[in-house]
Amino acid sequence: MTVLTTEQLGVLARAVSRAPSVHNSQPWQLLVRGTEVDLLERRDVALRRHDPSGRDRLLSCGAAATNLELAVRALGRDCHLEWKSDAAATVTVGRPHPASAHDFALYRAIARRRSHRRPFSPEPVTETARAAVAAAGETAGLHVVVPGRLDKLAELLGFATRVLRDDRAYQRELEIWTAHTRGWGAIGDGVPEAALSPEALPVAGLVRWDTPVPDDVVLTRRLAAENLLVLCTETDTRADRLTAGAALQRGWLTAASKALVGSVITQPLHLTGFRARLVSELALPGVPQAIFRFGHPAVPAAPSPRLPLGELFPPPGGTR
Image 1 (spheres, helix red, strand yellow):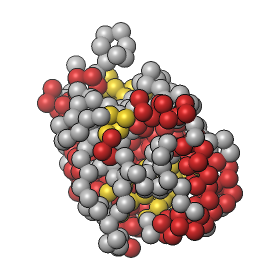
Image 2 (cartoon, one colour):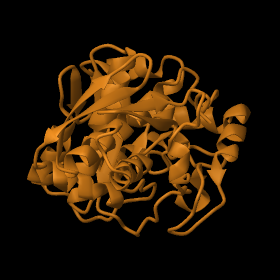
Image 3 (cartoon, one colour):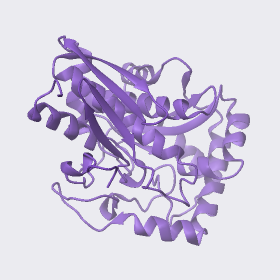
């Protein structure tokens, strides 16, 4: 028997459901086993063109694990999170223990976090806020880097945009995962059409067939106006990818707690040779897992649609 009530399990499910995921695919489920709650990776949710190795799916599950851990702590229980090979993660619910003010602030930010695939407001982000977002993602084996050589980054992102824009199979998959739903109560998965930006990278985040490619000088200038972080792991194991997703979410929630918004860029990292070039050109200390951009919102962003909470719990015999 679980140590949590039905209402408390609902709190956990709502927190997990609000985690960011690749193409808003929500590739996770929850399995409750007494004092343990497994976060299951739904391997049947596959983006074969965008995410052929499942790297972004693991980043997504890592982010969901952060939300799960924060929700348990917000319920006033101690907990321990462990990455697994058969499940993405297991959170063991412990004894009653008041949540720290910091963890509770991050938990409250879960409902406010948005993927803001638009230009940011010109209002500058304070140095204190930038440092807090970067520090929130630092953990053992993971480095959060403010990228230098923005001219080289612009050159690489411009190249990636042209490749992805002309990849017909990629564009068909993105169209399938574009949700033509809107509003604050939308149900389902996929990226809302209204959330996609007609701008170039890094604003666009997701490249479509008509995404413009500015010249390198213009793109360098746009990058310089953004707040960018590159999350790097020392190796590229399953646990590294989960850790990177968890760290990314902590940084993102820290930004949301300070009334900032953000979005993630991962699609160029799947192109052959892109990550190696990024490491070389930017002198990165490890394997880049994601690029996070954040700032003040220029326009409000509605939340992406979410699957019904009942679908987070697998039926008898396995995942749905």
